Length: 293
Image (tube, rainbow, N blue to C red; front, side, top):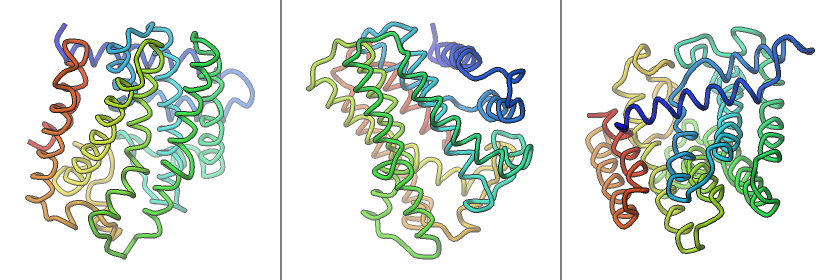
């Protein structure tokens, strides 16, 4: 199976799993459930589920365990997007080529969608077909990546940094938390779900995840500068318009692209000894960078 076909298969599998784990739109409160499904089931790159399944190939995890992990982390990711798009945050009207949740429904419903998706993610993990010890580690991993020490904390730094230039170390720390934490968590969760890897092997995958998370953000900053709204499925140029610190504003476009290439080389080096089971992880890093070339 080619890499592209494999990714498409993971996306389809994730869509089916989300449909299964999300509340039915016919059950009360119907408007909230409809909005949750609208936010989750309207496409997207599904990068985090793809990373879960790629790491699961290394750990030999059962597909059903990977489904639960994929759904849980995607729900957290989507909740963050719903809240991020709201007027009190980035105030955006387009996500994945469609009206954002608060535009399609209303602000109060969008707020509740994020709240409900966050809790539904942990309900899903609690029911994952793994041992109790592994469930505890999965919950701990996702919770740490989602909270003040991870995604939410990074978003707080991002909001506080508007109009204030950051140096490279400060920018890296913000994105390790805001974007990178969930990407690292996706890889760790896929690895944990197999219940077979040593701590050394888990640490190696975590190092890869840290670099990949930063690579994804650098590429995202480049695309915000060079892509169109139609290509991105979200408003292009919004970071520059909002005077947010980015890798392009810090390094220039050429410098950001060179940094992305360096991070790509690091991911390939970290996975050099992973063998055939780690090839998907190497391919994912290549896929991310090729979006800018």
